[in-house]
Image (tube, rainbow, N blue to C red; front, side, top):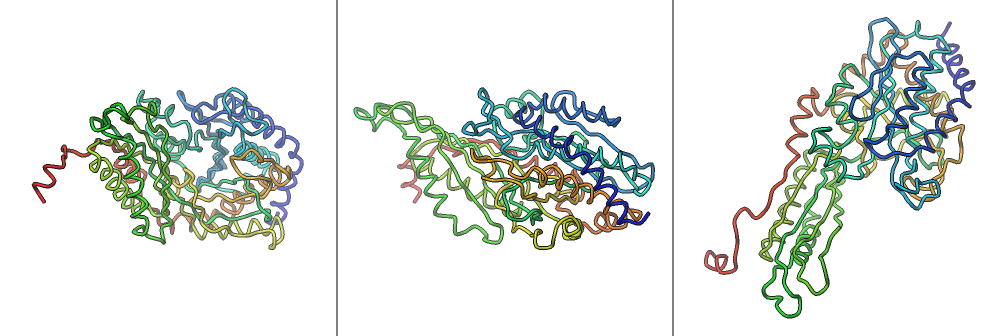
Length: 452
């Protein structure tokens, strides 16, 4: 049977499974859970893997499932990834009334579609036409939220990294994976939009420590931590023009605690920010400048500042050869006019951590109305979400693993990752976890004047 007929047989199986795929997606939509808590969603995935007769492995102390279809022939290993977690958007009509969680992120579509691919490949009985292995991975905690909870998990030793893909990479879930393929729902006039990459970031928690005093009677006896924070923020704004434009650097701090009472000099002020960019070395360089600015605010007011940096997500880098395969699959499924390429996103995904060590791609499927993570999010085309999305990933599997996986082998052999091994990635990432109190020595006006 020629490749065109094989692919049509595969796509026909997707069409026949459309109600099944939609039902899974909608069941997950009604069970929104946030990162590292997605146990009910995991149960749904395991239930369906078992129905399909797939062997799978799961993690003991956090959600995460990986099932495998083995062709029995030596070849590359392709992972189709779906994300288990929901986002918090309590204003959404379908959000969980207790947690605010809702799948206004499209992750329920991802999970349903990878299960749909597994069912369709089995039903089409085309493994003899392929080589290598196909992994179906349901991974936790892509959304970077509820960081107090994740910090507690890190302190307890439950997890080492705050995002799901980095944690699963650390636990060896990706050790036998060569290429990763994902889709993501999007509001777009195009049915298929190829991504060009996205920013990574370092996450920062900042605490300014001053001295409380009566704000009216004895302000001279206090040290105003809020003023120190304001000076730090002004210093950040003053150095923005020193950021490299080609790296799309972004810094967007917020004050989460500004003081205790209006008649008390603020002594404990909290801030958070991300330092985002498209190049990890430039992110690190900009982060040093941000720290300098924050420390300057503390020195100016005679305060202290605690700065805790966390490796958030690495920049997402897309391989051109893998993108060409995706473009071919896209134009076979829809018209050329319905396929486009998005410019690099200024947002972030933990798929960037994976792309740091192996080829990876995430393709957007235009099936939504409203914005991601917003109260007006809704699926407006269920066929695009659940049928076209499944066909796209199934088509990617076929193109990469058919014909002795020649295209996949070239992509793997010629890929130039940021890190040659996951060990190198972790050595770099671990250095980004830093917590210090500044300044290291106490400064006072008299000493500064004496030394000037």
